[in-house]
Length: 230
Image (cartoon, rainbow, N blue to C red; front, side, top):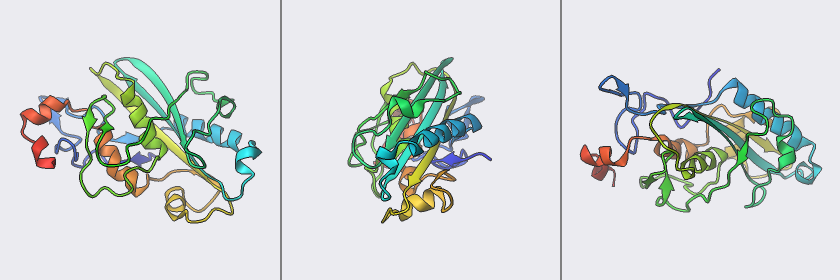
């Protein structure tokens, strides 16, 4: 089962206004037409989740709510492995011991914790280009792991000629005494304390398409589409 974050390849991109699966001169216009997970990434977040349950300093609080995510990308033939967390405090709760036992590229995971903009301005695409979100995106500053991971990838300022894939998987932990967490419970389901997401929260669904658009800004301006979004 493939889990998607931020919509489907057939959706219209809110940044460039082209279909995300559109081809231009026989080549895909978007290098990342849709953001999916993978079985190996689900294993990574499950391993971190198991380690988290052993950390009573975090899960000993019955009201605890934590979110974590993992990203793998192959860009210009080079692999990148990122992890991010949110919840509980503004500072990351992930520590090195939470990454113990990962069998998928062990020792190569880098934690990222970029600042999430508080309003619709000052965002960054995975290509490292600035982008503003449209008016009407709700909970724009919510620091979800998927958004942190994509912003962290953009902050690497990678050379960007070819993209083989960018994948993300997330997990949420909700303690038995947690309150006011309806959006998290819907996001992760109502079964076990932690589970793989079936979809992102509404705020991420709205923000992610802007962040994964890797169409160069000059192409958007040249086509006269950029002004249509402002």
